[in-house]
Amino acid sequence: MPVTPSRWLAEYAWLPEHAEPTPDVLIEIEDGRISAVTPLTPGSRPPAGVEVHAVPLPGLTLPGLANVHSHAFHRALRGRTHGGRGDFWTWRDQMYAVADRLDPDTYLALARAVYAEMALAGITCVGEFHYLHHRPDGGAYDDPNAMGAALVEAAAHAGIRLTLLDACYLTSSVDGQPLAGPQRRFGDGDAARWAERATAFQPADSHVRVGAAVHSVRAVPADQLRTVADWARDRRAPLHAHLSEQPAENDECRAVHGRTPTALLAEHGVLGSDTTAVHATHPTSPDLTLLGDSRTGVCLCPTTERDLADGIGPTRLMADAGIRLSLGSDSHAVVDLFEEARAVELDERLRTRRRGHFAPVDLLTAASVTGHAALGWADAGRIAVGARADLVTVRLDGPRTAGVPPVGVFFAATAGDVEQVLVDGRVVVAEGRHLSVDVPAELSAAIEAVTPA
Ligand SMILES: [Zn+2]
Image 1 (cartoon, rainbow, N blue to C red):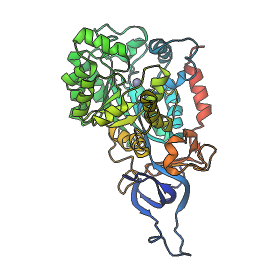
Image 2 (image 1 turned 60 degrees about the vertical axis):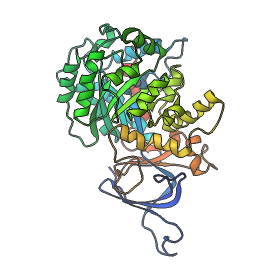
Image 3 (image 1 turned 180 degrees about the vertical axis):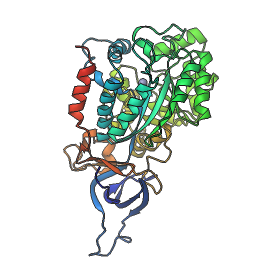
Image 4 (image 1 turned 90 degrees about the vertical axis):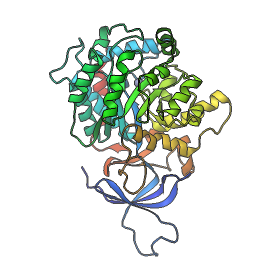
């Protein structure tokens, strides 16, 4: 890897608690952490003729972006599921066909390319909601965590951090139908055996940490929810769960348990300050209170929710209930956190026919510091002394961003405008190119290997 300069002079940098970016900020890095942040205001600017020995960073430098919800293998479906009308459930059948063809080697190749695509988009940390645990017939690999290990290696190759959210997935419906067909490889039998396998997975690499996930109330019986919640709580590890993505899930949960999925999770100890509910597109008003009062966060995945015709979550009501919002690209129909972030505001405009629900800094917060915290990296996502040196520089002279004030970047830029990315002080992307992965070539090859002809 190239030697990383330790002093960078950002044309603009978005500093914590600032409503707008600050011009001319000197950022110094030591051992992968930010050691000094100095806005060169006219008073502090060195006298003319005295050089600041720092590498210039033209454009706007943001803290690293966090992609809180990913299923890496779904990237293979991009652009392939739009032939018929279809819905979430027909899309899911196509997704299962890809899942059926993955093994640890093909998964490593695909995830490495997908995570490198994320690096190009300014994502410095990903939360992988991982349920593809076993062989297609449900039998364990020689290493029962071989698929998880492939994801850890993939993130290392791509140069980003990973929170592996090991998902417990036991049943195919809220009323406890057994897993069948392509779902068999998701299951561990019961939550105790899930916990045993998850406990055995202890990657030592510094770029990874392991958390837990309840796939959904469809996939974990009510009497086993607490086993997963306790496993995460004992380790102070992040705990994630798909929640109310579809109205059908709410209907089935009410029919079987007489309460909403949120109420069921609350009753069995799943909600809390280390918990993130993914989607929460169809909550009731009491659900929002339960989420807010328990300090549970919500990860919104607007581009996936629009792709799958899920609906629009009540994001302003969530924020008003005290719910911390983060963002994920989920199915990777799009990998672009600028698009996810502006959708939070723009979808709310469509629903309410009013503008101005979230300030630009709110969108940055969801895409960066809140997201990193939801993945268990509370020391990332801020350009501040002591934080991990994740820096994402967006050009302001490209066709989409020219003439845009820096504060408007979330309403103008795309992932393609990311020019340089540092992760833990190391340059991973320079001049818009990944330094170790040929992303388009590797995506093409990896997807061809796992998509049915
Ligand atoms: Zn998901």
